[in-house]
Length: 264
Image (cartoon, rainbow, N blue to C red):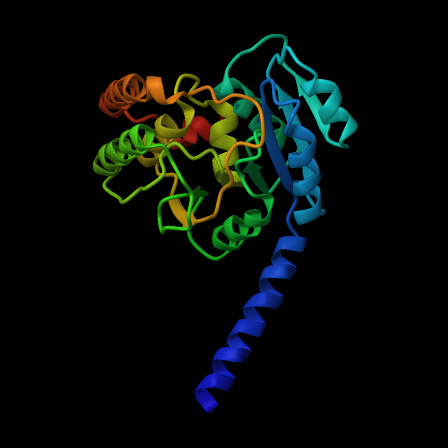
């Protein structure tokens, strides 16, 4: 009985502590979007409902559809890039805004509706209560029912295993763009962020410069709308290119973390 009471008291304390700590944070949710007119309004509204204390910015990456007007109409602030620069440049733009705005936490959420905004709290809670600088939402840490085409799943698992070896730590979802980063990581990502394969390449870079990463299990949705930039047909080709890219990256001299954080 005493044990149960102690556990309940700990749970109550943790709940109060986490809510208080989160309410004290200045949080920016970064939503990169390219031709996501079908899903972007739903994503913005869901983030606002799940995390009303956060600021939301959509980085419109040169969309050719109505992403800009739909995102603005949903209540988000929108930054439009002059043309399609790619996911890496879009995310780095968000980090630059987070750094210049002195945000404590930046959360990346894809504009296609796959990331469940209700899971943002899982990322934030782990970020607040661990030594992690970046927390990644993983579809594969435990089985929560996310369905991935076989060819793509095989590629994801091979890539995750390879990057785990490079980083000397277990990683299960190295292509996940659902992340929460603290101020230390924000500063690094604002200064320099990979452009070709940002999710897996950034993990290797983080490991080399001493940015701590960890994963938490999250549920994700299938795409709400739009078209994925990585089709099953290109999964094997994509995996080979990424493995080559991260291999070259791992062989380069590790940049000095102080150099990265003093660039601004």
